[in-house]
Image 1 (cartoon, rainbow, N blue to C red):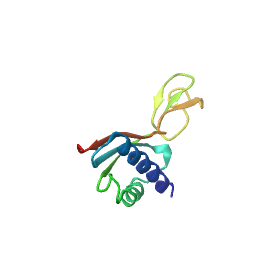
Image 2: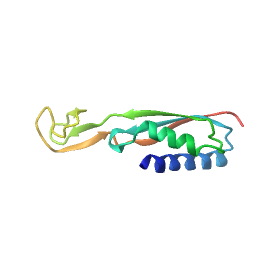
Image 3: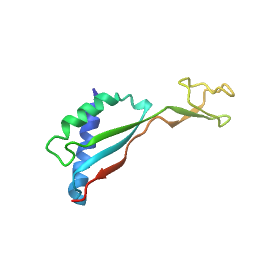
Image 4: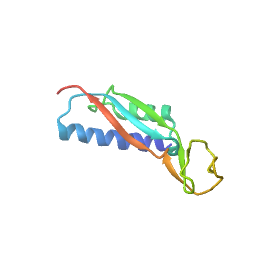
Length: 113
């Protein structure tokens, strides 16, 4: 269950930011998570809700945007979103990941201190 480790890293980073910036209570955390990260959103939310108790994030909502996997062909430049790693246009196996590896805090909504 790597969701617990991810939630711990997110909470720790945000608590530190709250202290550094003098933020008030955090109300919403917007997170982007790519499909290749293999994160179960409900498990991440549960871990987050458990870890934020007695912190400035207590009661904050965790909003998760799931980013689908997409590839770019190394031969023809085509971009596709299917799970297959073969370019649907030219059949090449040369590809690079365009999206699906994201794991980032997109934004944070806080109350004035």
